[in-house]
Amino acid sequence: RVTEEEWKQIRETTMYKTMPMLQVKCIKTQEIKRELTQSMAIARLFAHKFNLYSTNQWEVYLIERAVEQIRDLMKIFLRIKKDGMRPQAEDVFRKMDGERVLKTLLTFFKEQGKGVTFTGVK
Image (cartoon, rainbow, N blue to C red; front, top):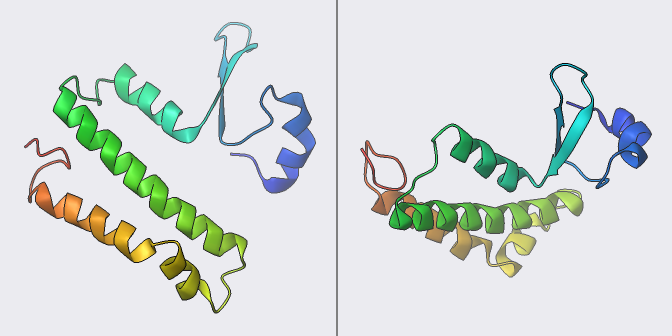
C-alpha cells in the first residue's frame, strides 16, 4: 500500500503514472520487471493463474456481466464521492440511473440462487 503522500513522491517514477498498480519484481535481484495496472485486469490475471476463473463460456459471461454491473455502480459512487458527498448525492444517484443499475445487479444475484457462486455453480 502507498499513502497519498508517498504516491505524490513516486508517481513520476512509474511507467503508467496510475493506481492501482502492481509491480512484479525479479525474486533474485528485486528489479522491477513489469508494472501492471487496471485493478480488474490484475484480478482476472490472478483468477486465471490460480484457477479461480471459469473455462465455461456461459460462466465467463456471467462473471463479466457482474463485473461490468459493479463497475457501473462504482462510477456512480465515485461521482458522488468526487462531488464531496454533498446533500444532493441522492439526486446524482438518480440522475446517473443508480436505482436501475443497483436493481439489475441485485436481480442478477438473486437469479443465481442460494448456496451457489454467482455463476450458479454449487
